[in-house]
Structure formats: structure tokens, C-alpha cells
Length: 88
Length: 276
Image 1 (cartoon, rainbow over the protein chains, first blue to last red):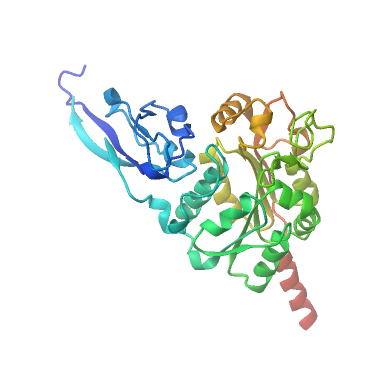
Image 2 (image 1 turned 60 degrees about the vertical axis):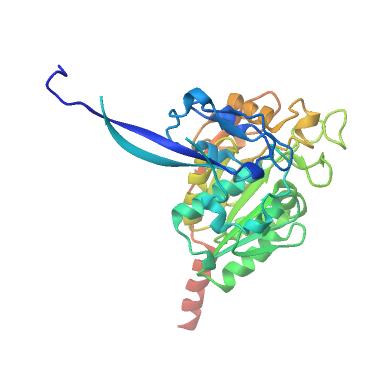
């Protein structure tokens, strides 16, 4: 039924902002991200912790729910939504 | 896309030069602060009309990190300070953020009498089951059987059920959340701050360094996973049924939401009646 209806699907992407030097590696953002887009990086910050980073294959998967920023005790992560319309 | 940033949007409410804070990795207090800042951001409260009062303890540090009129009071005396602020300036929103030891052990009497008088303040009591800052001693909320520095073979004292204490003392708004329920906690703080009367929110927070380490939950992440598996939301339940016991589910939710004339309202009415 979709042959003559132009189907528009709104895709929501979000950018993840990380303040690496504030991270204390509690792991909450990595464990409780509903989309599972974060993982522990191998680099060290100035305090000697490993800040989170995006999983390389999932860079477009963040939907910007903001739960990581709600659950971060150190104000080290936040997201900003970036909306764009894409034709399928 | 991942972008490296310098500042968080919440930094405008913080004394950002004091960040990173002193709390341990995995501590739940940062989440309480975060949820509180998101709540005042959404309520669009003027920072000049907000006063935060805190007592002593790790939780008492919260007042020092928020960029508004904040008071770090003597041990257990956060609520008397807040009562004075509220009665002197009725325009001011007064919030007490303090720990379980400060509010219910040393300041226990102040809590029940402020709730009895129905003073129009919001109290956020962070319950981490022990005295964290002084080394993890047994507190009034340590569950039966839990191990702490001063109860190495298990606690034999019955703990307070903070929500039941608040309800029995006459609070008009009583809710309990864990730090994992950060979004619900934020919504609850918004409701409580708009509520007229004594509103109390108990927040169960992880204390991995002094409590969790002795109770088979050595990291903050372990405690958060425990909350995910063991908390049930039951709105409107009688708080006397919501005891916290080891091995049993933690009942969370909004328990009490009633209307009652506040102390300031009753006092204004009295003044009008006497002046006639």
C-alpha cells in the first residue's frame, strides 16, 4: 500500500558530549544506556580513569533520551538532539 | 557522534570551580544533585528565590556545590534553619537536602516537629544506610542484619522506615525513589517543590565505599543493579508496609499526597482574627 504514498520517517540522532576529565569511571552510563551505545575507552584522563566512548559501529544509534546525563554523578556527559528528515 | 566538551549545561547552577566533587566513584549523591538541578531547570526557578539548607555529612556537601543561597548548618539542625528562613521570607523556596543520619538521628526531633507543624519546606533525605563520611558506622536506617564498621557481625537494631516516620508525623507529600529512578526522582522533586506544606522525598543512594563494600556490593554499579532487580513501584501504598529489609524488594513510589493548611497559612489567619 505504500507505493503511491511518500513515506517520511523522522530519524532522531543525537550527539554525545563527554567531559573526559570529570569522569570517575563509575560505569553507570555504559550499563544503563537503553541503546547500548557506550563502552569503556582505553585512554586515561587526568585522574587516571577510563572515560566512556561511543561504540564505533553504533555512532548513529543514540536517540538522545538523556538518561546518561541524568544518571551521571559527575556532570561528565550530556546529549543534544539533532533532528533531520530522511526519505526512505 | 561523539564530541569532547568543556562544560555541562547544568554548570550554570553549579559552583563549577568546585567540580569535580569530593564524592567517591559510584556514589549516588551526584545523581541526587543532578536530578535536583534538572528539576529546578524545568521549573525555571529564579536562583535568587531559592535557598538550600543542608546538615553535616557527605550529603551536606550538596549545598556547597549549588550556586544559590546555601547554608551548611550544624549537625542535625538543617530543618530549624530552614523553618526560620521560610517563616522570615514567605517568597523564598526552601529546600533541605541532607542525609539519613543528620535528619533522623541527630535531627530526628526537628524533623517530626517540622512535619507536625506543616512548615512549607521540601526535605530531600538521602538514605545510604550508614554514616558514610565518618567511616561507615551503624545508623538509624541500617537494615537488620547489615554489616557496618560498628556491627561487624550484623545489625540487631530495628531501623527507621523514613517514609512511615514522615507520614505519621504529618507530612503532606511522601515519596521514595532510588537513585536509579533518576527521571522519576526529578519529577517527584518538581511536584514536592510545588506542593504547599511539608513534603518529604526519601532517596535511596549507593554508598559503595563504606556500606556496599561490607555487604557484598563493592561497587556503585553493583548497588545500582541491585536496585534495578529489587525495586517495585507501588504508588499510594501505606508507608507502614514499605519497610526496607535485606533480601526483600524495595518498595518505591509516591505514597502520600494530601492537602492540609500550612503553618504560615494558619498563622496569617490567626493574625487576621486577632486584629479584628
